Image (tube, rainbow over all chains, first blue to last red):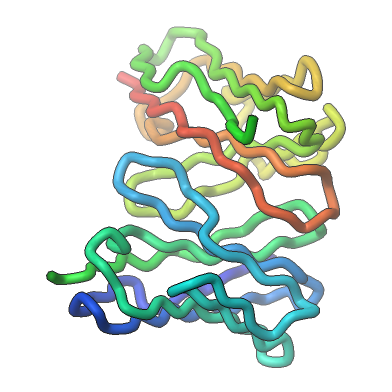
Length: 111
Length: 114
């Protein structure tokens, strides 16, 4: 079945440092990989996404890399700030419509 | 309008009650989803509607009954729920099946079954 793994489950970094979260997926046919940020009590919100025809995408302090051969993708946050503290979910889309989420990473940015 | 609106925001119901959750979007999206999210867990897919037809039912118990009256609305009818059904219920929409684009989430309904 569809499966998305995510590591680490928790991550603490000092403000200004970088944070990296890694995900792997099971279905080689998946071709869309979004990352969602969810603050406590709020909805998941898309922060960046990547499609399988691209190896890397960057948006200011956030970047995502994709290795289709290895079936893994990573989120990179540089110059972290306290407001980056949240739970981050990677996801992969299966059969063109079924979003399956990774188990999440709780990121804490320490001032 | 890039919002997915869910009502109510909070709901407390007894195990014998019947209630409905509502979701609305006016972005012209043709795929709509119900997810269930327990504390400290990722959203778990329950149902997918594509062009107002149920296309995925992830083995959800029949006490949850989805309905898509039109392309903008999605309901989830609840009946005879159990305390373990208490969770955040998230609605989402995306342009259509197969376009591999962002799913927009509503703010969720926090359901407590007593």
